[in-house]
Length: 468
Image (tube, rainbow, N blue to C red; front, side, top):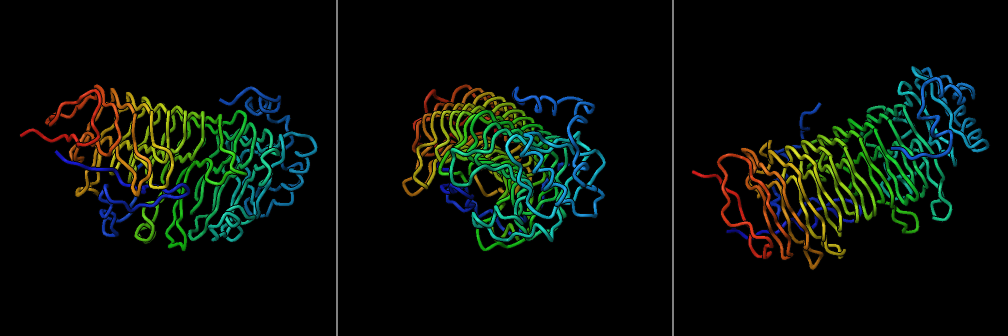
């Protein structure tokens, strides 16, 4: 038998650190490279939200940005026209319509007022020139500047009692000019009540987030968006990150989000160059939730990223998601993630582990009382990047330096198939006490070295090996 513990500092509270002891991350080398894997419910509310979800004929009842002077020809700047449209939104508490086939050019941050928004039928594009959105400042002030945010739905940045109320973005494209060495966020929503972001297509950005939210209250929906083909090849002075959907990295006055549904989104191809990888590691996430509570992550598809679902949240439901081709982990619970149900997910072709439950070195509470049930995890280490590591379908382990541990979690009725290149079906490490119940090993040629007791001791690792 072997003793083992999962890497200590896999993700600090704001950004991930990729070097740790137990996961043998020395396997991260430039020679391995960072080449991409291959891939090619909104609530009832005000009438205009129901209108925005209606037919194209319904949407024509909203004023179009052309009414305010927008050209949408892909060449002329439409900033002044959008500014007039925002003034109309603020006065009338209504969104405006984007017209199919139009390509609007924005050169500066557009702030959406209460009950305002942009609504389309899927065929309009907001184009983001690299020369205008050229931010390289990774500080809090820098990453929310006029050259770092395209659409800003945020309320007060200091007073959580003054949220932006009921803004909506729905049914159009946000496309960045493809130039790296920048940090730009397509959509930012901080201190917002009853947020709706639905059916956007966001592509071509460098470093930054597709949707970056924080301090959400009320009923919030981020649904049916397609966020894809982000890429950066720079070496940054501070730890960088590319993320499809991020919640609560920068809260307002410490107010954590609650009551958010993230459902039916597709996040693809969040990738980095070998130079970026050598300097920083594979710093990309599909969905990253910090200390969010009472949330739902459902029916999302995440592929070709560093990590699929990176979760610090509590009392959440993570169900029916598909995560494929993650360079590191498919689903990660860390830094006090507790009382979550992770059920009926499919994780294919992860790097080190399909699902990892690990403590923290940062002093947070234990990662505890999570239920990991009825998930299917297959083909770990499919690209053989981690042949020298203890790759596994599911892993548990401690943090380091006296940090939190993974304990009192239930791992039951999962289907585990490490494939031809994965080392173990599961690795049970760390000092916590976790229940492993009736997990099914389906790959022919595997047998279990040790019995699978109802409650493991936390002192041994039970390995899976091939039969002769």
